[in-house]
Image (tube, rainbow, N blue to C red):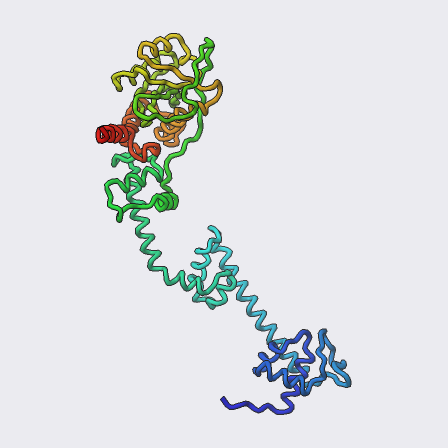
Length: 414
């Protein structure tokens, strides 16, 4: 490109402008005049007075030895300042307009994806570069986000389809369970599916969270243990080890209340196998007398055929320390075990079972409608718990399936 020739007057005015502008830099003045930075430096060295004003200087005030600001230099300086102020004003007005729009847009939260979407939605009104600067996002990141739009739409459609499948698995009318959370839903989705078609549990949890499909959560707990008055005590044979090497070896049990809408309670006594977490025996009544826990243990003996040699662990409730219950355990050849007085952790598994039962049967309600409804609901849930409900302690299969698998393993090893 041909070299441009500048008049002597232009050069002196350029030098004058640089030396008379407070806080001026070669780069800024050169850019304003449309010349190279090095060119301006050479002119200043050749024609300048060797000093630069660092504060505002009124007209006719000396700005160098024996020199004052010329009228042309003053006009050029003022025009440059005016142009800079106009640019800054336009910049601030643009920022103001963008932020006004953003104030309403980000009412739901200022996530990074929201900022990208804001830029995309307002690109017709403002320059993308300016939008990205105000939103504090990199333009390269914004364009990469835009390029992935099709993939995001495909993922959203796949997530919506997965959410429909999850709703079906939670729908009681279709044989589902509304109480199922992400781990059990994942187990249902992956049952009988090849490795290529399996769904990751983290994705299931995310989709359930985004679509409001979380399992039912328990609202409150009520203590039902009545302290023993007889003074009868039994040693703790579990030591908070709630496991067993095989079925029909170790059991835990407890009583929980089931509230009715009329203000009364029903009471449920349980006998739970520590190997498979199977609800082996249970009984329900409108009282907490010793017969309730006796009926539950008798039901467990009937289910197993015999309880001879098994350990049954409970709290120090009066029904479990009664002479009648001790006599039944002796007849069934069951060894009693009890945790420390006042320590729910010593019977934590039974407490957890009670919490799960009420969470999943009450489904967030404060009480059951009536006694008949309660009995039907608990009956259905108890059998579903043993036969279909996936249990995390059993590798996300049902207690009955876990015991069947254990028996098959022993047969194969024999």
